[in-house]
Structure formats: C-alpha cells, structure tokens
Image (cartoon, rainbow, N blue to C red):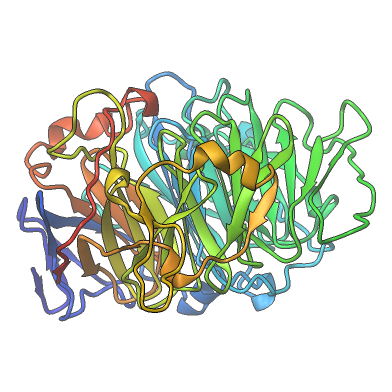
Length: 551
C-alpha cells in the first residue's frame, strides 16, 4: 500500500519512507501481482542513500549480485571498482547480474545498450585503495548472512537482504572509473569470492567478508588485474567465475574479447597477446609465460560482448553480443559449438537452465528466445515485452503442481524484465511445444513434429555453425503467465531466491517480492535462502501458459 510516497509493508506493518529521488511508489504500480499459484507481495525495497547525486546514475546501469556468506570465512560479496561521474565511461548498458544461489559461478549478467560507446582510456588511473592493515574493524559484523551487492554511479553498495532497512550497510567508492559488473563465488576456497569489473577495463578480486568488516569506503585487501588497462583498456561488460574452476574467472570486454584469469596468480603478471588478424573470426591465444595473468584471450566477435554465463557444470560458456548472435563454446576444448542470430538487433542477456538443456536470450527485438542445446536452434519465442529485454533467468526454486516425480526436468518457469518496466513470468513445457518443420505451402497446411530433431541434426549442421535468424512463422510462440509493471524506471535484472523474486531498475532501486505463502515464514528461513546447492534442487517444472494475468 502506498500513501503519499510512503510504502506501508502490509506483512509486518513497518513503514518506510521513500526519500530517494524517483523511488516513491507510482500511483499506477500495485504492491502485488497474481500468478496461478497465488499472489506475490512487495515485501520491502532496497536502494542507495537519497543524497546520491542524480546525475551519477546515467553513467552506469545497476547490476545486482546475490551473495551468501557462510559461517566459516570463505565467501564474499561483489564490490565495485573505481568510478567517475564523467560520461567517458560510456556504460549505456542495461546490466544486471544474477548470480545463482549457492553456485556463485553461475552468473546471469545482462548488459544492454548498443556496445558502440567508448570506454575510459587506458591511461586513467585507479585511485589508491586502502590497505586492510590500517583499516578499522566493524564490530557489528557477525560474519554471515545474505547480501545484495549492487553498483550505482561510482559506488558499490552492499545491503543485508534479510533486513527491512532500505539503505545499504556498506558503500565502497571508486575515484576514476565506474564499477560495471560483479560476480560472487560462494564456494571460493580462499577469502576472495567477489569479482568487480570496471569501465576502465580494470578488474578486482576481494573478500566480501573483509569489505563488510572494514568501516572505510575503499576496497581493502584487493587483488588488481589488468591494472590501468595494461592488457585491455576497453570497458568490462560481464564477469563470471568458472564453476569448479578452482579460482579461474573470465572477463568480457566491449571490444569483443574475453580474457581468462587465475586468481592464484599475481594480478600484475605480464601478458601480451598477438595481434588479431581477422576480427570476424573466433580465435584463442594463450599467454607465452607460465606466470602470465590473464592466461588466455578469446576473441569472440566484432563489437561488444554484452553478457557471458556458464552452464551449471562449467562445461559450456554462452555469450551474447552487439552483433545479435548467441554463441555457445565448449570451455575446456576452447571450441565454438553452436549458436544463432536474434530476430533483429543486439542480444543483451542470456541464462542457462539448471540442467544445461536450454538457454534463454533477450535483446533489442523485444523477444525472449528459448534455445535448445540438443537441437541447436531456437525452439520457442516469448512475446510480451514492449521494449528491449534486459534480463532473463530460470526460476530454479519453482516446482510445477503436475511434476511427474521422476527427477527429470519436464517443465520450466523463467522470468524476464525489460526496459518497458515489466516483469514477465513464463511457463514452458517442451513436450507441448509443436515445432513447424517447414513453412505453410499456399493453400495447404504446415507439417508439424513434436519429436526431437537431434538424431539428424548432427548431419545437417556441422559443429560450430551459427544459425541465421529463423522466420517468425517457423518458431512457436509463448505468452506470459504474468505481466506486471514493477518499477517506474527501465529494469536491468531479476533474481529468484527460495522465497522471493528480486527486481532491479537501472537507477539502483531493488524490490523484493515474496512468493505466495513465503511471507509468514520469511523470518525463520531467511538465513538459508541460498544454502542449498543447485544440483540438490528438485526438478523445475513449467507449463506453457495460455492465460495471462495483467496487472
């Protein structure tokens, strides 16, 4: 309920005033939305301090990373890189990163924008970072909890997910470059579990726990990679830990390159790579020396790479870019496996299903595409957004009432957000998708097939082939189960947790929507939101939605 710009939390009666600019609930926005399984309720909001100058917001798009700190000193949260208010960072990208609960390396990162913006030059200097030895220790930090790490302007903010307090508990400021992307690894073997990529190309790894323990406003105990853009001075666009990679991580840049790093090596290790002879071809180059960091450069495409994400088992890396192509690589073999083009325009975001069978993409054609790894093609298009799709992800906590109980994932639910300010939820049951094999002849009817095409797909399309954009009439269409306007500003990402759905707008406002029945048990279960492993989750289930609940 909203009265005069004040949000009243109907679950616990708490009232929090919305003092931040643009954060007041719009009269046209409801505090709930209906789904077939019940009503999702707006529980509370998170944002940056209201004193933050508004002109800083437009320089970067807010990403959010979910970080679960365990009792033992192992995990950490995403922090932000140095940033500046100047427009030189050119981060006009709808970037929202989702890091999967309990598998920190499965990051969903969304970067919108045209990829043509210029980045800070390599000569920019990063402000001095305080050393942990001279820092004050925060006596109020108990060493565990679930946190939201998000970037706004030149600052990384950290909020306690389980607190009703709207303001963050920690801010980290950067002086000469904006934080753009971040990733968290819950299973990190040492303290460094948070990665931060900057608009200058610089990358930091830090301990989230150490940042929370420190009362200052600078990064502490950070490892610095690609310092001053020594290897690549173009803007970072997306960053991800390699699942099971023992501290390896990858960083994508606006110039079409992805770099592989090992956090166990010195961040300043000298790396030089040969000139790329053909910018249109995929190529991999390895560093010449054993101490070099980064250890490899993958040239993916011409133009910006907008998002990268690993399959849950780390076997495959998916990228989407300004050129409109999804590309899927066998990570260990360093080979392009498959991919294809959007209906039109750039692709901005991508996400894997938990079982690695499907990939979601979204972008400038306003469509959500469902890609099949088995068939190596688009098997469904979701139509429902009225503007660019800036975030997609599967809901790994949702289970269908009609699940067959065999442990096989037969149905899926996924969500998408867009610059139209809408959250859309979709149900997908692949057995019910009827795929037209060919176009309708004049006066005739199309031939359909529900069987898998994988048996003869290998013969038809060689490994490494990128598919052209399919015809609109050749791909089955999905309609959303829910379409709800959740913010006043364009959205940049969404995250599913066990008890809630989090939506974030590009201006840095986050809303937590509690699942049906979850609000009552929120206080007792909040500490375990991210505790279960991806692989232990019950199978997802989803059904193709025929009805749409409009709010």
